[in-house]
Length: 211
Ligand code: ADP
Image (cartoon, rainbow, N blue to C red; front, side, top):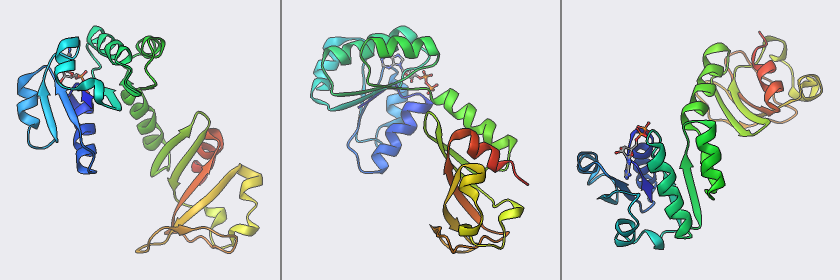
């Protein structure tokens, strides 16, 4: 179930539907609902802060819910509180500010996400360095798609001391017109390659800045 079909909620509901997940999407704006009808499994117009309306939609039977109302703080919190009260097993909610996130956690939301902040941080990394893609896997662990620095081109990874020197591991390599394959100690990197590296956030960033 996805509640709130703004930009974030609607992309989420559409992507889940595309992946074959059955989704009930709720928004209190009939125009939004009308626009998405037909593209998402079930779409309904309802005020998610209204307990009775949620009951009528069968919300208490759902296993997982995402509160994707961001800008309406009161509606976001009230909706999340109702889902907690209904004992939905896995509740996710989007937060706009740190405090909003804290409140959501306090009332019992299981996972709080900050899509706007996360995206801002991610894009900052991408535009300011050589990273082609970046994913923060944990608080201090990241995966990054980048190009091999000059000094690591043309010799086997096993001889490069990369892990000791920079704390990063080359996970996979992609040569032009080929697919990604696992990197081994014998893998030799070339200029046109794209590599996937993992490691602590600082180490990954430092490595991705190498010429
Ligand atoms: P985004 O930034 O992802 O576009 P918004 O916070 O602007 O997200 O969008 C919130 C969505 O949630 C809007 O489509 C709005 O109509 C809907 N919404 C707001 N309050 C309620 C509510 N009480 N019940 C259901 N939907 C709501």
